[in-house]
Image 1 (cartoon, rainbow, N blue to C red):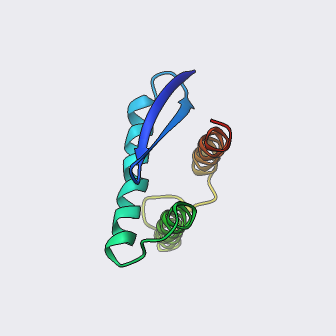
Image 2: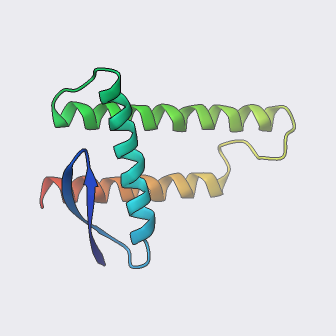
Amino acid sequence: MAQLSVKVNGYVYNVGCEDGQEEHLQAMAGEVDSRIENIKALGGNSGESRLLLLAALLLADELHDLRLEREALGAAGGSPRPADDGALGKRLGRMVGKAEQIAASLEHP
């Protein structure tokens, strides 16, 4: 397991990830940091926990919208299959697992 330092909202966090996933983890940290910067630009500059929560909610909202779009395409006969297919479920499961690993490493640095 690789150890990586990521910077979010000016703070450096040491997190673990699977070998070879370092670049992906850096990109995901960049996504979270981008959401936090957007929140702060709107005047939402508050505590670190609140900023992280708001960023997580924004990302969850985007994921929810993508699921709805995918389901709508499936219902309309579009090429993507409905969101309940096995591949998407497995992918979402992996994403949840990675998020839980990151959260656990933040709780116990």
